[in-house]
Length: 328
Ligand code: SAM
Image (cartoon, rainbow, N blue to C red; front, side, top):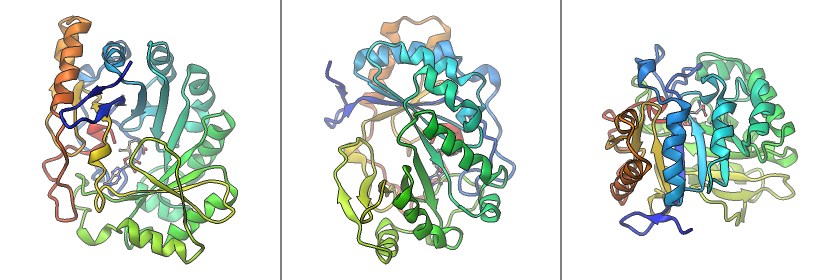
């Protein structure tokens, strides 16, 4: 079945589901040091409610699901949700974005439940710097988690590094070199001005072209046509085992190829990461709305997808919820 299209002709076949707004880390670019007021537990969608949204979404043409948060592995028995989602007719691919700290423990049961792949967020290979960026947690747990995910068959593991000038940009080359011998793809992401308690300033954002220039001092970046959906552009260093990706939300918007819809942990359908316009699906679920009614809300949120967003280095994002509340 063909995917539903938004008013700009973009097929929408990808749903990002945040299962919690809680996180066990406090990354300096994502959250204030004290965190943000968590949603009341009663407002968080149950696994059954999430599946009730995914069924009609699959009926409209959604094929891929990414589970995110907050830290999704903080949600109890996440494998139970994965198992239910993998049984929904039409869903072909389920992946997870995680900070990796709890991955070692859960990788095998997630694979058994039907999870296909993981993206692990990791911004430093230096334990001290890792601690400064993440404020909590232990680098060795993340490295163990990455290895466990690969061993459990959650392949290819993609490592996502948010690059911050003056904080971790001296590690760009080291991260790029990881691709020479390891099976993990490494993706560099431009930092975005999200609600992180005043951390953001324009000069912290390193444009992708500058990151590429630095890596090219190590060796030429050969473009690779992966035909993978998503915003990253991929390259390979000569002879490297895996790929380097670049994601440029600030300098090269990828709105024209946006195929996604988001479901927040408190039950809102969100058509665009950069706009607080949301549709309340939780209320409908809790008054036992039919699948048809849920499908109507899904279609409405697809109709509401803006043509593009205005986020740039001068963009004011103070009005936006934090990434942990939306689901990054
Ligand atoms: N806890 C999980 C994790 O760490 O991957 C999932 C949620 S996290 C909000 C999802 C992604 O958003 C991570 O890759 C994180 O690095 C990214 N992110 C958060 N704040 C960001 C910002 N200000 N700029 C760019 N990426 C950001």
